[in-house]
Length: 125
Image (cartoon, rainbow, N blue to C red; front, side, top):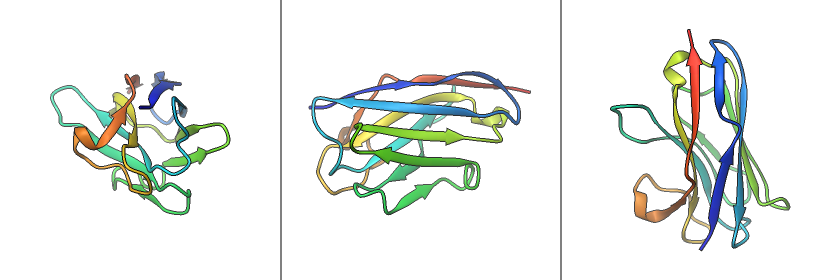
């Protein structure tokens, strides 16, 4: 079992930046894929960015490529999401996720991952 706690959300103007942090406890995350999902009101939860267990492979949704950067610090058991050039359409609750099985990436389905409680990101126009 792993517990994930997100921080760093808030209100920012269009074009601004935020850095989300996900702190894991209960187990090391060093051999598990990690990711950030988001869910806007009335929309499905979507995968925004993911990073494999070694940090050598990353994935980004087309909507955030070139603006968001995911990274991990296995020594600190944390995952970061650097978000730049934010747009109003980035407004959502952002969730940190950890794959339940080692050496595998996070998956879109709820049961394959552990989840944090979410942090609100609001981008004003």
